[in-house]
Image (cartoon, rainbow, N blue to C red; front, side, top):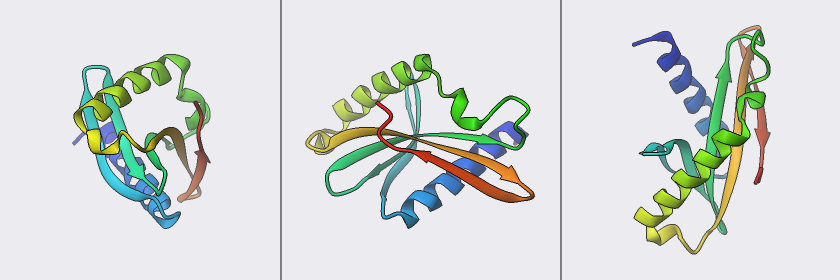
Length: 118
């Protein structure tokens, strides 16, 4: 397994645990579409929550949150429409996009969570 895949999965696992501890109900992860992949999907009482996870072991290339570009969000929205089209049981919930950035500092994860970014 390449180190980038391992880092990505580690980031998603940290993000999942973090969000579940906040009361989010996990639905699925790594939902693939022709527009890209949705990292994590959760729900709460009123929302279906689509989470983009960014993980970094160094700040050499900037904060993980900064790597979520407008182009990435446009692709993510298209992937969300595809997910909702294939899963009509979630269509009554309000869709929300959130970003979880994870950076390791002194072997401790530092988590930034941005809610309802669009």
